[in-house]
Image (tube, rainbow, N blue to C red; front, side, top):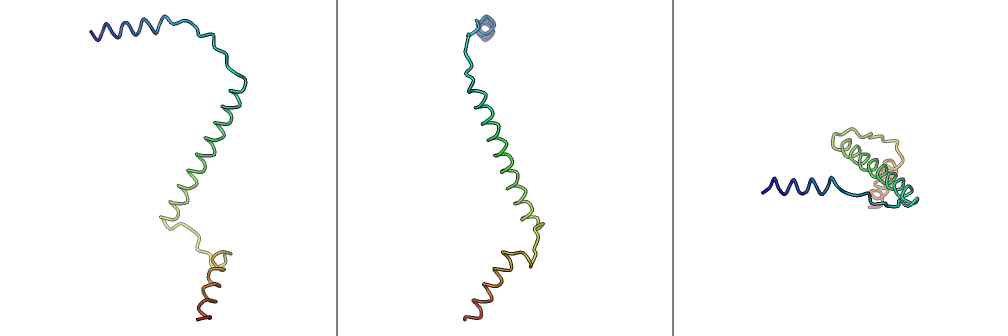
Length: 83
């Protein structure tokens, strides 16, 4: 029974006619847009993974001279002085 069904499916698929389909010229732009989206998504994903791994493994730079770090230290000192 299964062999007969598989034979029928094979015969139907092997004797198909051409569809005479038209491919719109805008399809190329759609493919390019999709490719750009995939590249952007993959690069964003892997940059987040890289940053997370660096943070988890302790490979981040702990510069005391960096702008945001020194600003946060100054703010904490000002708050301490006000109290």
